[in-house]
Length: 312
Image (cartoon, rainbow, N blue to C red; front, side, top):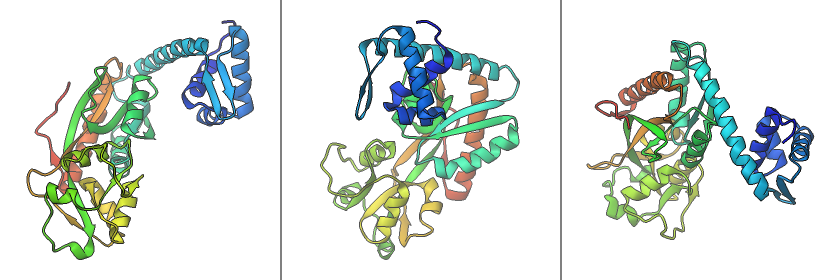
């Protein structure tokens, strides 16, 4: 390929991942004509089409797929070199591309970002909120440095560090506050509101209730915990939320909060990154900060900490 540039490789990778010129241009912070021109020049240099263009977006040709595989490898190497440079100092500094799942981000991130600014003033966090599966893909493609999510992720290429556990609580309409807390058998018979497909918290809630994820449901599947809690407040059903979300999500809803009898449903919160990351020492320091923020949450909201670190 003649006169190939790093800019073209980055633009092509974004287009291959996102599927449309408009989305790729937005992700790369350039205009669509500018991105289109770079892709056209790249195809001319390659001497063969990289894309199949259609009314709903683009698809990679067979040749384009092979080029994209190599482009991703090149970008991963460049990101590792960048990480090596950032890891050269004694304390975390420079950009930190951190992913967080939606059922953690609004509740834990404010404390984490504040604490990071205090302890590592030269660090510049770049935050990415998304579902677990997408964050794992972005980690493996070196598009983010680390992610805070629910464990385990069971990905051999990633290091997992468990930070703390937290309980799930039952959210019911306020008028049901005095009723006995249902066990999982009773819960299966109730109108249980859950997050939509793709959220790991949905899977965890279904697991606690011993309900198969493939079971047909004619109930609300929400995109956020806030939606679920507000619907409970107007009497639509009941839901489960993680304990760290209680203070924020229930303050404007007419709901009651109840704990289950033991064994209570739990999830383990941790931080993951690539085993090959040259930033591992710094990421361990950052994980310590996240863990400390989790401890503070436990003191204020009743979270349960693990007895120590578990590293795989």
